[in-house]
Length: 140
Image (cartoon, rainbow, N blue to C red; front, top):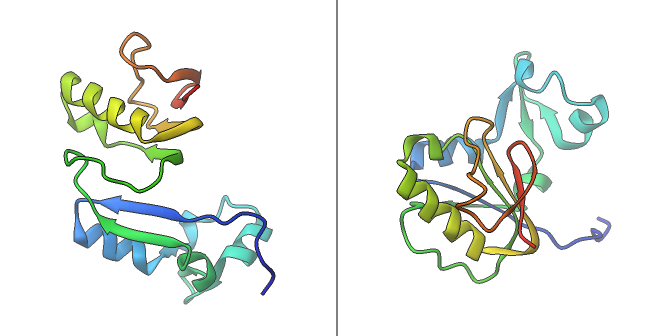
């Protein structure tokens, strides 16, 4: 196996062990990956049966799955280059969203990005992140 250009890892978290188990399995209905470019499907998925495909093991091995409550203190060893928190903050009140975004900001590497759901825009007055485009913010 060729050494990758970047030494990357992906930390995938959820408060639900059931959802983490589903994510660990990495199984998707073929209809769910239909829009992906053909070469991506070949490179990153293997056919499972006539109706579904699974993420290839070499990709899944790059993902660390952990149960994590976003309300807990962030005690990560390193800062993140990108944080994806989509369709989670819609369940929180404004004060909790602001606190969570500040925690994300502190956990983001300079130049890193925060991606949120399209229904979760951040108030520019309440965050130090810089607006890039809808649902995308950058730490300077």
